[in-house]
Length: 244
Image (cartoon, rainbow, N blue to C red; front, side, top):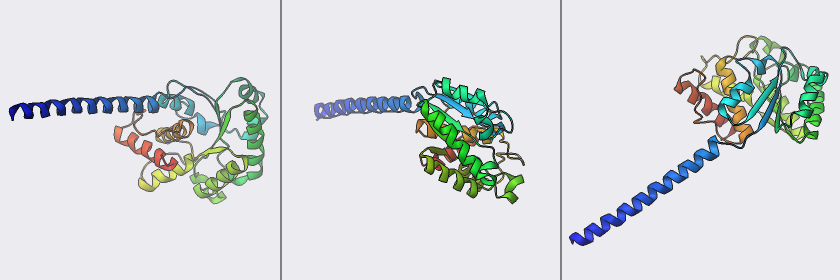
């Protein structure tokens, strides 16, 4: 009886060790796939919404440090301004980008949809010609422009419609903001004129991480000086908005 019992214990020990090894390898592979993504070159084209809080390029690299990201973001710029700016076009054509993000001036998609659509299409053609992918940056509701129709729902409708017309992706940052504020109304993501706080830029970067790398941002070890609880909340909002 004692010998049989000892043999059972030994076999159990082997199986336990093997199971732990498989769990470790599985966890390691998951970690590699989630946090060591293939490097990408990403260009953000926008204005101060992209530029605030050290820039979305800077924040994205905190999520994906093995990539390369840059921005062209003069204050107040529209996509028409970028189309007419030789520096923007030269940067698109010569940067060998994998992804180019287009952020329109925050009111234009609602107040001048025709211009929004026209210059998004023109810039998208330039981007496609280089082999890069275009992603639209859906911005958020502006408190000082609600009377002009610059609301979450109208922005979402116009960005989604145009993205479908052009066959390109849209990063639903504005929807992520709305989802976060629905759960935490006291959270401050932007100022009266819409410029993002650090929390707002962090949430936007988490959304871009999710859509560019097709992975959930939950668990990324970067807190931007915020509490772990707040960071996890923002990461989960981004993931849930993207359905990840």
